Length: 386
Image (cartoon, rainbow, N blue to C red; front, side, top):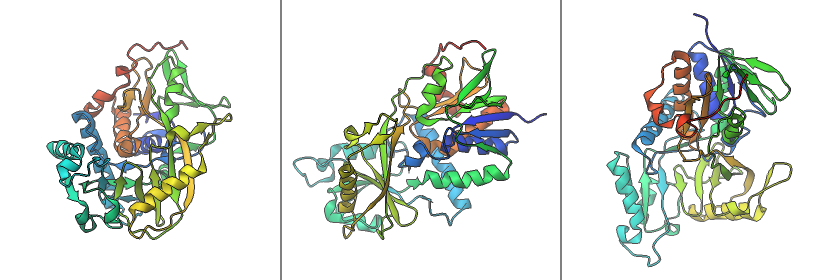
């Protein structure tokens, strides 16, 4: 049987993961990106690997499978410094009265812990004075009375992972097309037959995958597929190298912080998002003071309060489907065209690519993706002719 030819739009984690899995399955793959690998949302993702957010059973199951694939990758590559599972620490605003008991201090935190435990998710409430025994690098005096610790959580640097996967992509004979400009899905008799670059070049294919991050709804919109979109601005700050001692991921009311390769830290938050503005040229701006304030928020949590310096910050849209859930699978109205659009691109990056590739190669819909198919949001999408 002739191996299928597949064209993948987007060289973020979803597109690259899908492309590599297709190559492993015997397909011929052309990976097309409007700019460069990891230049979009994957390049500015906080990429916390977790499933502790009170998700539905179906979504929780898919996220756990995603975390499992990362653990397998780490077991196969134990010396990498861009993927770790050293736990996650979470807390919310302490009650104004500063109550002493862990439940009185923040009942919402206790409820979150109990809900996670009810799902079989490893979750523990830890008093602040005991934190140094479970999480290194923090100043206990800067912490609330009680924190939620999830030992099984981790983090990944997606640009590092994408480079790792692209080496395999090249070795397996994949074709990478960069700086292609605005790319569209080519149709014939209503079915996808390839991708067309901004310069008009056609990359023919038996199947197409659209994994263009926050640009996915626009690409699909040209096909008459109205995909609800709640994408919003986000910013990731990475510090200059500094000895910090932190190993776990922190998710706090004022700063989310994680280790980053090269003795750096990566961080983001939401309190400054109203200050992010879109420029006339399509780029993004933020008051540099907001970056300094975020770095100071992170420093205040760390033992010794090291002086952190922001080395870079990247701003852009974070892909978020209209209902917050992933959109994964073939479009009902456009045969041969598959969508990959999700807010949880990091946690789902490996498993989504694996399952989409399997569907393309076998023609069989995978049951894990049943709740996340595009038709739930765009059931009656009209497809333009030819």
